[in-house]
Image: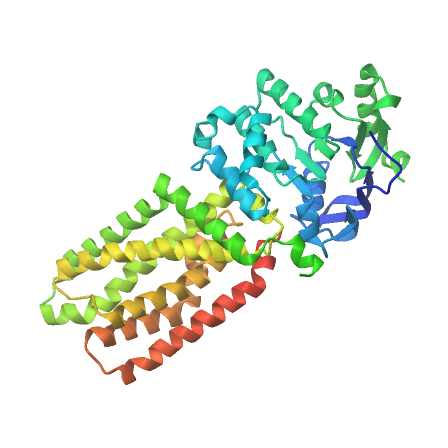
Length: 246
Length: 231
């Protein structure tokens, strides 16, 4: 579902250090409008750091980032308005109801006609009947579905998902799949990290592997069969550094 | 309206939303207020038993006892108010919003001030009852308001810094007490002045000090808050 327009996300030479440790060593990354990119990589590869930088939650040490034509960190507010983020934490308040949580975020994002949008999203994620229940009474799966509603409340062009399946059982994961499929089909650009290759294979249109602080390999969904995905991932993760240097 | 301002939710609107969220969540859970109130009442009762004083001497310690109570209870509230955001990951949710991040500071400050004022509204009549001192004097109430504003203004900023650390419970008081010393001194002196019936001209310098302190620290927080919460 890509087009020939300029990439919606464009990252060039991104470097991030934490003290003496360099986590990202010149990451180059692009994502076109409507693309669903699976960002794979071993633990500690820097996937979360990369997404946090894209979300303007962390400042890079070097590199250039553009999201929908806006530069980070100079135009952070404009970028944030175009971004929705779902992480393994739902970013929701347990002492507020689902409706109140969305109303709160609706105010922060100045969502027009927020009440109608909130009702629409609660129906989309299957929580409309439980809308007046406190979020702390929700299961982990329900909280993640509500987190997706929160993330797309302001109709963002880009959705960043960081391990959204963490802690979900099979049924909850399947429900989250359905919701993500609907969300992605609305033309959004999605970047998602996950360790669950079988699950992400059903959703993504491209697979990028982040290893040794760089995008070590990239392949589109049409170029790879399901059965080859694991071998592709392992080859990218285990390849010597000089073989994958851009 | 410029393109940049169209991209941002207004400071006022975002601040109001955060205040609404904090008050609604707190009225429902009463986690923060109950901890602050119990702590404040224990301090007042402890002083009541510890200071077995004659009525005249009691009058002279009233201001100090009150402010020790307010400040200890306030620190408890400040610590938990930011920790709740951090522990549940909600601070990221706030930081992701397309708004001036100082809205988080102002929203949390107003909510913290409201909680502190509620605690003070409970402590004052109880103290009056236990110590047989009339505390409902407009001048004293003004000093309590100004002192609380100054304490919360600095406390909210420092709790945003301390919340990033694992030792935040210990770190906040260590950072907070030296910085708020001018507020504490001015508030105690000013309150004592009103309680002992000094003329306004004698108390005016303490009021001025509190006003200046409040304005300066709110301005500093407005300028630096974005850097404080950035990773």
